[in-house]
Image (cartoon, rainbow, N blue to C red; front, side, top):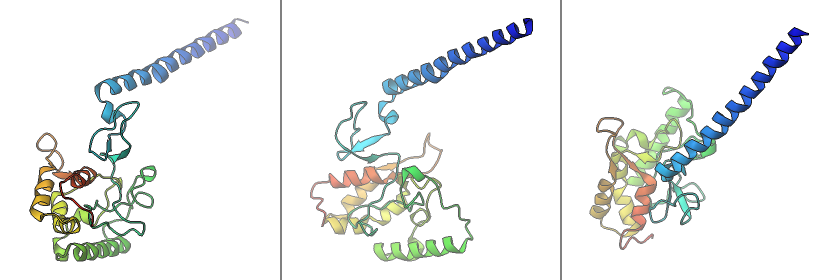
Length: 216
């Protein structure tokens, strides 16, 4: 009988402890972190969404209809997968069918894989023809996908490579487009972490807002 009572008591203590910790850590902690995030970093907490004006879409209620997230790469191609000449192009994506946030990931192909080598060669030839440059001028990030397949940035070299094509498609002065690109180059974090980069979505939004920027 004493053993049974001891078992019941221990079981009761365990159940109560589980309930208290579930409420404390599973509910209370989650609500506290969510509240802190909404107060301190609402834009980041809500997905870093931006609208067509390049502004945050707001907090819980949102603002203008979002056109994307500053943290996620997206396609700027037509229904047939052809790059839209009036927009800067992102790096390739191996996430799902491309830029699918539900299937984030790389191709998992090694650098000597014949399929990857062939794909890179085809991409390099396509980009060189599109931008009217030598294949040797095409930077590595233009032909290789990131590990997530969703990187929103490209290198300044790849962005600047696209200036003439975008300017021609929009009837703009190439020097003005180049100045825009240079103004949007993000420096290394803390001055030494990572690499300089350009956010493609933010660049294209700024491009749409340039005076006289017609989309031919």
